Length: 450
Length: 115
Image (cartoon, rainbow over all chains, first blue to last red):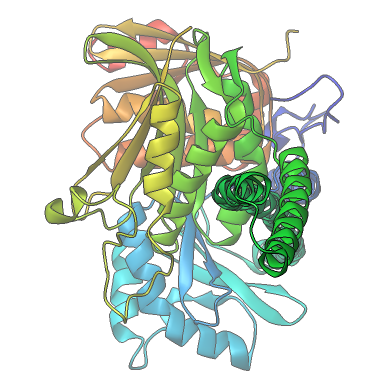
């Protein structure tokens, strides 16, 4: 929300309200109106340069761009696509306003090949009316049906990052040379902003992955200690028996001297081995941080918001929208912060892995009733392809993948959801899933109230 | 803080009245669109009282046009009531009055919607 310190840019006053003085001619009024409009466009440009710093989320930047251009040029229809970073010349619709999302998505797919070819030849604004040659004809029909007037490339360092589409101006008049020049200038700023946002998001995502890698290394270290501890136990117990037996034989049965020499050597080595094992056990205990759960009672929304802010750049970098909603005044829950976020992260990872670019992922927290009890419920919902009914039953089993074939697109051992459910249950909570093919999936983590 | 953005919602018969106050700019524009779209999805007509808008940036106007277009494509109607000088000057400048249905007061807007 705006703060008092925001710079307030005065808007131009409409020409007809300018004190007119004694009898200005119609021509003078028209000239004043024109000046006021140019001033409006310049102010819109100035506002855009400030507004582009508001959001570091690609979808937020797209909103800023489209709203500004719509207000600057007076159009009620606009959409923005960004090219995928995965080497495919496929545009992903970030935002559309005044155009149905599905239709805008189809429009982008239909027009992209022709547009990209044109932009490669000459990166300039293209009027939809120019799309008359095959194979652009079908795209042209769709653009005309959706009242799209023009397409314009978004460039950074000479590379096409994406493009926008604008509908007709809803006031009188069409796009003139001055409006198109203003649009071109705006898109120059937009290209730099989107390029920087992508770079910054990539940086944040790399930092997050490094931190995860570090967490994984620490976990491996802990597992190593646990392994050592188990091994020590398995070795030390039989070794104690061996040593005691040798001592009994040597002390009570008085074997012949040569045999006693062998037995004494064996006893010495066994005791030495036991000493080494005990040292190893001590080391293992020192290295083991055997506190698997640290429960706290309090607000779930705050750590989730922190997680969301950290996760957002990486998810939007992958061209999926991530939104966070928290019900106000949530009652306190009992949970382990680290483990809760581990579960949520596994669910978000899962949503990113199993949805195509352009999908939306919603992270939401609220209260809910389940099996006669009140809970804090954290949902991770996506609008991806969903999960087939016959796969739902094995979703939380270890080593299970919805697509278990050797040619599957998504990697992993199928442990994420199994581990997540175990963690949920260790917190006295539950993890459930609901999905309909073609309509997305919702994973819900239930945490007990205080 | 008279300048802080806020939306107050009131149901009036078959219509919803949203009283908008403060700065309508890039930060508040998505919020206005979200709240307005929810009214449309609930199948209600909408009256936007913009008398409390102290400043309207291009982005604010963009969100207004987007919302008007959304309603235009449905059977539901959106009317703007008693826009402040900050709003009127921008709308008049771009000659958007024919596209945006504007009334002098909330009551006139509601009356035009048959409420």
